[in-house]
Length: 524
Image 1 (cartoon, rainbow, N blue to C red):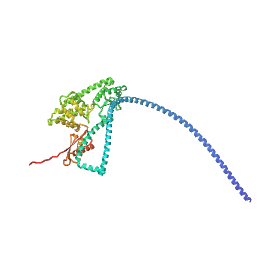
Image 2 (image 1 turned 90 degrees about the horizontal axis):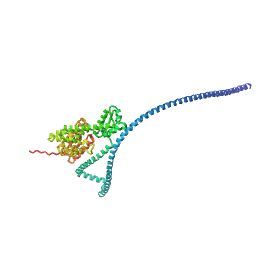
Image 3 (image 1 turned 180 degrees about the vertical axis):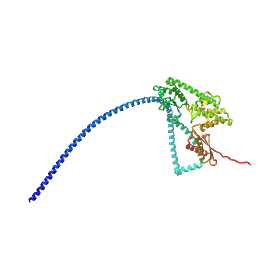
Image 4 (image 1 turned 90 degrees about the vertical axis):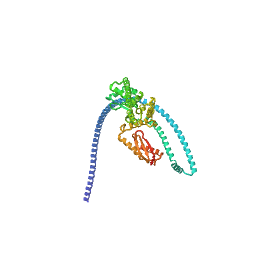
């Protein structure tokens, strides 16, 4: 029993010692953890304090750098604003110059707008009348259609098919005649409408081609000369534009000034005057007036001399001085790159050669050929085409009737009344359309002739076709057993439509269809 008691006591003591060891270990671990946490807190506080100090230092450095950068940007901004102010001043000067030009054009456009407004009012009235008539016609047609359906007991489609079949069978000739008449009426209306549309389009749109043909360029020794041409507050450039009637375009093009205007004479005067001013160096309003007047006299002398040389070269005898001057003005006109005065001289010689072959008056033919395009000298100043203007001019100076007839008919506006008029028209076509005369290569010229004949030969019923007058006309021979007289108009219209769809060409191409029946017998 004693041993058992001793064993129990030892077990109890061991358990108590174990519990005591566990409690002591727990408190030791808690003390170590508290010590570690305290050390960590002190380290964190130190790190935070150091971070605050570094952040404060970085903040001061950033503020200093920002102030320096703001100062630099402010200085750069002030320099940029100074340059922009200078650009704005320059632009204001250009705007002032443009404003003067636009004011002049605005006056002209106001007049044109007033005229167009009146035309529009008339067209509106006509449109209302047509709409009223259309509504009445529709009502009548509906009423007639209803009555016809009631009487015939046929539907509209059945009645239409019966009528159309009878019309096709019995009225083929009348239909062809009607088509021809309607086509002529449509051509007249289309020409009238096309003129109106072209006039309106020209006012609203400036094409690239127009710009290329209505400008001249004056070379400058340096770009500093542009400022002298503009003058103080633009007085020099305004004086030049007012005296010459030509717009000066001074832009970023290096060492060049562009002269813009539709009148070639004014452009030449302005070009000569500006070239003299640039070479002389003295540019002010008084000097500008003197130089422009001198340039105008020089151009007038050049025009007179060019006209006299043309008259002498052509050998047409005495010509009225005013007509000589108009001929000289043609030296400043071009058509597809061909000088009109040289074209007129060439036409005169070609026509005279043709006249010599058939026994006509060569001198009179040369005179008609030389004067045939005289209207182009003032067609940009006077309303109307150059043919109408030319007829009025030569009639005023009592030119022979053959000359007047040649001018009036050389573009087919009227039928020629003399052989000389026919010769001049042929010579004009030869001079204008021959290879090399205008902006067209020999290869394109030959291809155009071949294409004309190919298109014509492809039409059913055509026997042969020939391109004549340098591609200005196509003569088509049809088979008489297949094509009757009225069908020739259909063939001509079909060829015309094919040419318009498939080809690109300057001017117009005349389509002439010929139907010929020959009866031959031999007497023995």
